[in-house]
Amino acid sequence: MASRRVFLKNSALAIFGAGSVPAWLARAVFAKDAPGGRKKILIAVFQRGAVDGLNVVVPHGDAAYYSLRPGIAIPRPDGSGNSVIDLDGHFGLHPALRSLKPLWDVKQLAIVEAVGSPDPTRSHFDAQDYMESGTPGLKATADGWLNRALCHEANPSALRAVSVGPDLPRSLRGTNEALALNSIGDFQVKNAAAASAFESLYRTSTDRVLNGTARETFEAVRVMQSIAKTPYTPANGARYPAGRLGQSLSQIARLIKANVGLEVAFTDVGGWDTHVNEVGAQPHVGQLANLLRDFSDSMAAFSQDMGDRMEDITLVTMSEFGRTARENGNRGTDHGHANYMFVLGGQVRGGCVHGVWPGLAAEQLHEGRDLKVTTDFRSVLSQVVASQLGNGELATVFPGFHAPPDRVRLFA
Image (cartoon, rainbow, N blue to C red):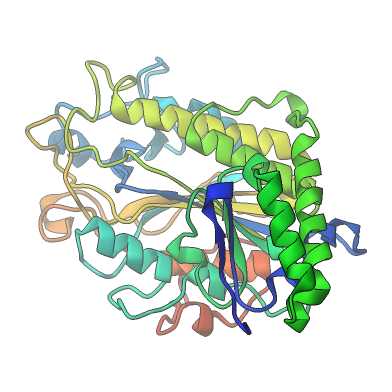
């Protein structure tokens, strides 16, 4: 039993890791009592389905954008509620992202344009796998970039790496312990009789590890339950949307404030595969607008809730690839190539669109149809890893990748 994986899915408890599960779980729960300063925290948000970046961060200063999308383009900025929210005279935000504009204005939000994977696949499955493994084009990679990004610690908190969701994502799989939970309230063994039986079994086991750690394990679970029982009110008047992302970020905020040793967190939100009816009769309504409004309001609520703790936090968003520059015949877009990434945090060089814009003229498009990648997504993630986690071993985190010297500079 040198290596264990415990799955108590019927009890809504899923713990993943290697080594002595009881010991590291107990360490994690009581980590809030350890001395020391606040940790820096990295949060990754995956937009699954390939979001249409050209209708999220709109290149309204590129005339080709409007000729390629006569039916679904977001109108040029005119101050109305259904036009682009201008950022710098060339780029602007979809009107549903209005709640992110104040974060841009205070330079907490940065945007990287024309970013993506060097691998040309248009397969959702492959592209997500490559982005989460951090090794584009290589399917044999066993672990994920976010797991490899964790620095070695002698006594790490078990809650240093958490995914909010039913399963551990590809990004967090690896040798470092990580766990997945649907919510803090579900992190428990709900059947009291089963819990008592497990505790008794472990206590009487001849295994020297289990024998000495049963009490700590179940005490740790009880501490987690006590955290869940404490009413949580977001700070500064923040109100999280009821959707998946809002509730996930609320759970992450709660863990951060509980000081349980969180270092990295992951969550995702789907629905971005907009082949049909991407926009409604007006661009500020419809499938994309509804998704973006929840997306924007969730991130804004998180920042408001965290307040000055945002100085220690960086949140980065990603999607497996972008969508075609030209709209299709169904008021939608098909699988493309380059996209955007948001980077949100107190230490970010915000209020700026980073990266090289390749243009949307016919001769500038990738394969004559897509926005061209000019920044490898690993250039963005490697800077976030180095800044937030203090991990300078980037060749280990992103094997085979060498960031160019003129890469985007997201941190001062």
